[in-house]
Length: 220
Image 1: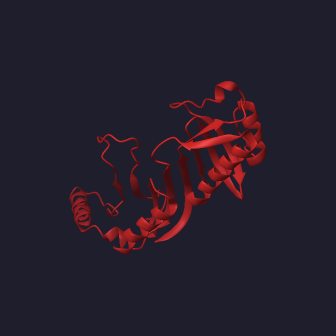
Image 2: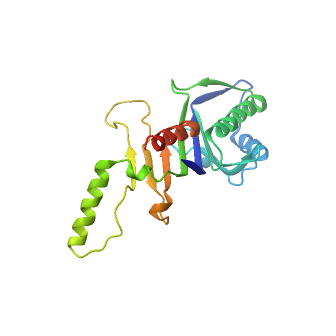
Image 3: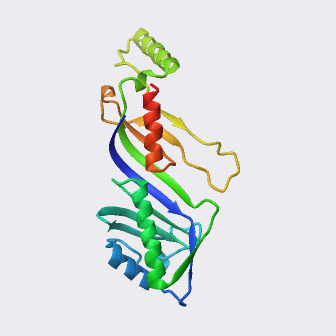
């Protein structure tokens, strides 16, 4: 298995800040974050600085930190969400740590965890799997051959079916504070099957995501 590209790394940090130095104005926060992280897009009016749960959050886009892009930052009353392409989730966590430290220094914010779960992760990768990966699932390969034969019987010369991907998902009927997203591996469009190029998404840290994919490919 070869990593071709980190398409996106997303991190949510559940934390709530309390101002110890008195009133903190939203416009001062926006001005300070734009200056520090060079965000191109940011809230420009009070209605866009909505921190309550269920809203879109105060959204900042197209910034940078420590030499890598910060695609999007959302501030909430009880959390911070950030995502970035091209870098692992560990770097996004470093950005959030810097953000919180800056808030403490600049505005006197004191933080407390707002949930038993401290972080939620999302990872999107482009990878190249081994030739053996698509042949690993014997039952599905037999089904693919049967489909090919049925199409040929009806006069359709199909190029041959093959494994297109797999999805693992949690039991969404279970009651839980946080329901993780799906684990997905699917072929990238506009690539030949022989190229073995896949898109994968997982509710994991980037390193954990890669470890699962390497294990999956190794066992094939």
